[in-house]
Length: 82
Image (cartoon, rainbow, N blue to C red; front, side, top):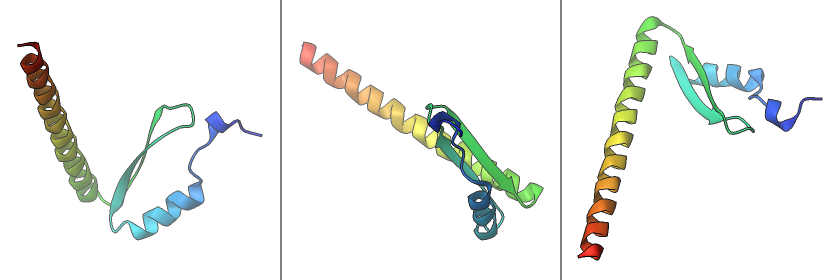
């Protein structure tokens, strides 16, 4: 029997996700051991490019939001020190 760390999303679920994805998907999860796992499926090269572009845009927005939060935290710390 596999340990909990060896758990992976069942192939049946991935196949069902493929059926409903309308072109593809990128699914990011964590393993039971806390390691990032990427599941992806693309029907065409065009779908791959579109999904990867959307993921890049999302990652950039996350980075910008994190930068803004860090900047706000630094400004609050500087105000408290004065």
